[in-house]
Image 1 (cartoon, rainbow, N blue to C red):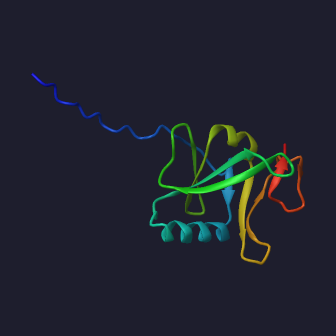
Image 2: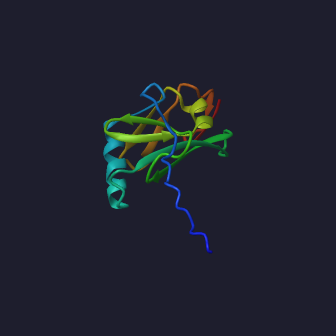
Image 3: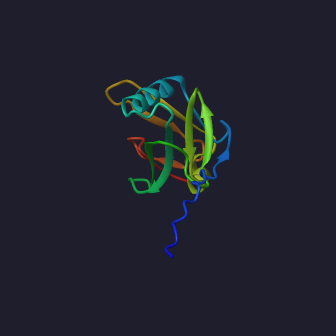
Length: 127
């Protein structure tokens, strides 16, 4: 007798709901993220904000568009956009605001009250 393979029901990721005290995005950033999600065919997607080692000050921000939160993420709804942050990055971005400037030297900018120093280009920081 041949055993039939069992199909385990896919369990949804175990993420935690948070609020704008973790991270907040401006209406300008929300419009840009929404446009990018729609262009990628992910209207229900999320913006992942993380902090990684690198840059001239030691830490830098990394942003990605994804389909959904991952396990252990914090999920924040801000300005109509779903933002996810992993637990390690949450230590560095708590209280931050993400803005988008549509200028020559613009783009996404993070105002982080936890940054002890930042480089002149604004792309990296130290805590």
